[in-house]
Image (cartoon, rainbow, N blue to C red; front, side, top):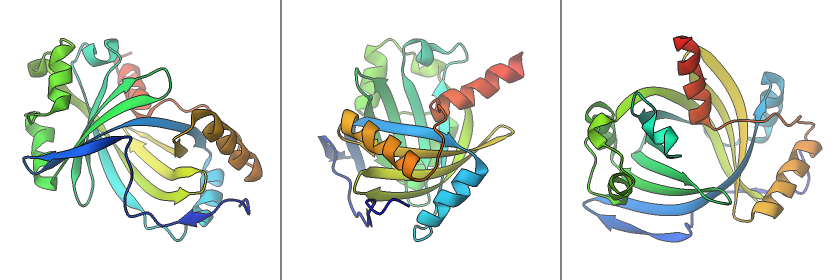
Length: 218
């Protein structure tokens, strides 16, 4: 581990755009800038030692699109995430740097119900989808990906060590979320070098999941 890397506990995350509360839900929007690499199992195990003080959290992403891929064609990514304490509805839209992320936090029961009904709450996400010509009635759950995550704030950004299981696949991944793209990139590659991690390009989780659907169709 690099001696320059310092871990410290966080109780809140500050978003670029203030959150709003209505109807018992929390609405949070922020610009997501992150760097990531796939890991070998050996690399994962070595990094897991650095995260040994962090309690792992299991979360499941349910990916939403039409069977024809209308969301992907519009460069939109939509998911429901269930966690032990709550659920989240998230829409990601690419920007010149990073992704603009729109989040609605809800309780566990509402999130689980939404994975079955896709009954969208009145929120900014729903408005954006309608404005962009998405037919909500055509949306469906394509499948899910489950992540066991160890996440901690460091002096170079919010770092997450993940094990992902989807379809018949399992992969390992390291992510670093930052507020400054250039500095974050330099810090990320320095961390990889200092910990003898070979960079391996990682598509987004949803893209890797979608690839398994395309594979199964072929």
